[in-house]
Amino acid sequence: MSYQQPYGQGPPQGYNQYPPAGQYPPPQGQYGQHQQYPQYPPQGPGPYQQSPSAHQPPQQHGSYPPPMAGHHPQQTQSPYPPQQQHPPQGASPYPPPMSGQHPQQPGPYSSYPPPQQGMGYPHQGPPSQQSYPQGHPPQPGYPNAPQQQYQSFPPGPPGQQPPPMMGPAGAGGPYPNYPPQQGPMPSRPSPGYDPTFLAPGTASNEAEALRKAMKGFGTDEKALIRVLTSTTDPNRMALIRHTYEKMHNRSLTKDLKSETSGSFETILVSLATGPLESDITYLHDAMSGLGTNEKGLNDVLLGRSNADLHAIQRAYRDKYHKSLLDDIKGELSGKTERFFVMLLNARRPEPGTPFDPRGVDTDVGELHRVTAGKMGTDEVALFGIFMNSSDERLNVLAGEFERMYHVPLEKVIRSEFSGHLEDALVTMLRVARDPVSFHGATLKECFFGSNGVNEKRLVYWTVRLHWNPEYFARVKGTMGGNMRSLVKSYVSGGDFEDAMMAVCSH
Image (cartoon, rainbow, N blue to C red; front, side):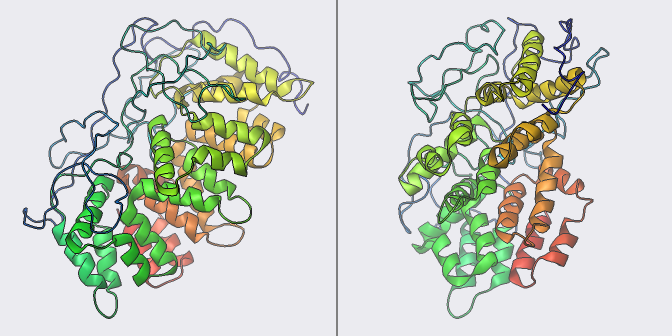
């Protein structure tokens, strides 16, 4: 192997005092109830807000996407628990940066900071352990899988253990189904990932302005940009879209596609359809035609909450009438296929899940064994450790691995893996360690690719981050605050540049 002593030494003993007292969740058997994330609030009256009128659509839940233009979705039962009361006007829908972290305490492990809070949405992605709730409601029918060696803590008190969830791989089959760890109850998906929910209020002014911009000869591109960037609430955008279709008996998406073209069309449609539809469209495009856009699969599926992964798979089946899992298995093979099948089980521990320090030491030694063994790398064992760790735990594992073996875990992964699987594992690790910096680097990569600006990927990430403006501001901060200057310098001018500048302004 590439790494000699002290990397080849067995793990030192005596780490049973990890983590420091008070830094991580309570002792076993005393897990507190998972604190609810604040719900996504409706935005205050914007430039298009008006009092209710005859054009106001009924406040009801609807199916997503609508079956056809002009048919308002019928009321259905949401698969998620009811949303809580919105916070008061003017209150931020997100916790403050770095919220929810436990105070550092002196001790041998205090040099390892907890991971920065990222996106469950973006994250997602991501998607966030901070900005967006993660998790998924219980789903019946998942068989109890055998307990894995990576879980060393006893069952939690009744009512505090996540119920089993249906994984897309189903029962049985050649792939292991890893059981969830003890910890907080699953929470709701990110805003925009419950297609049955519409924001309260009215959007008739926005719907009328959009129709006026596309009616008759010519198109008012500036009006389209102004209306479609007037909100960063995906639930509000869903209300605008449904109101447009109800008032005018037309599909907003089809009208935008008929009136615009190129990257300008792509960004407007991405804004109008919201984050969930953008995810599944981007995924489908990544697997269409010759070859596979591996970065596209990584962009959408890695660093996501369990709930968002379930929502993506349901929406994909609803739109394309086939299983995302089956399409993934048709595109990938070998160990890479196995990794993504395990990922789509969407059974990683929820953020804030307590973990036993003895299990951390065990897994650090196991990571060394499976990557430094003379008989090759045990990929499935490494996958199991990653899938059975929350981002917080994976961050601690990586820090301990480097402390014990004097080499970064990422460097070991890069030496043992290659191609798509290497990129996927490194992405998963980087999102766990520092999601803000990772997403900033991803945006820069969109500008400075080997073939110049990758406009399609740039649109995907910019719009995805746009739905979480506070997190987006932190990401732009890692770029030296020059996102707008990059757009001016590297994006072809015209309407597309204007739309990008408007999205980056939030």
